Amino acid sequence: MSTEAQKTSFWDRVHYMLVTASFMIAISLQALFFIPLVIIISPIFPGFVKWFIWHMIRGVGGRLIGLKVVLEDASKLESAPKGIIVMNHQSTWDFFLVCSMYHQLGDTIHTVSRKEVYYLGPLGHAMWMAGSIFIDRSSPAAAMKVLTEESRKIFDPSNLKRSRIIIFPEGTRNNAMGDFLHFKQGAFKVAAALNVPVIPIVCPPQTFRGNLKFFGSESVELKCLDPVKIDPESDLLPQIQSVRSNMLVEYHKMMGNMGLNKEETS
Image (cartoon, rainbow, N blue to C red; front, side):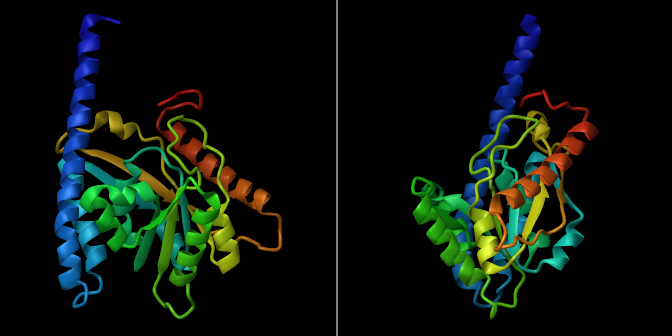
């Protein structure tokens, strides 16, 4: 590799870190304003939380970094007013992708995060106020108990809102391009127990991360697949594998459309 290529690569990394840091600072500042506004405005305007997240994080944050998020086949969500959205997990930028889809996903959206995120200053508390569920990943039994209890409240039949929970079934970020990690069973167990569908949403390889710049023009297109009912009377593992396989097929199509192959790594 030439010296010039090394310099370019170094400054590209520096630029990416500056963009990422600026975005995280902007999100934290928005979270700081979010907390008092929720307390004051939400009783008057119940839809304020969703409006704020959509306009501030997607609108302000998206314009800062020049990233546009599109959800293809979002109409499939209409057939499942309540359900558990499962997405492949690649980076911390998934947080931005989820926030950018808030206006399409339903009346109330709940994300599932590890409990450590709650202690990330105003951002963690703002996520809690926005409906995030925090679990202790070091204790699978305790995590499953919290997830089931909170899901039961969210999917209560008396709740007529379009309510959905977003879970990354891989459980951790997957930096390898071309495959998914093993899907954990928690999301599927809850869906089976509470009789709500699983709604797969596939995110393509996040090649946009290497091209981010201030006020740029990058875009990422996610795809919503058909909702899947989980049969509590049947073996869970084949049903999980079927969902994972269908998501992976779509992911590989996205890779092909982007000119990537399965052997490439991020």
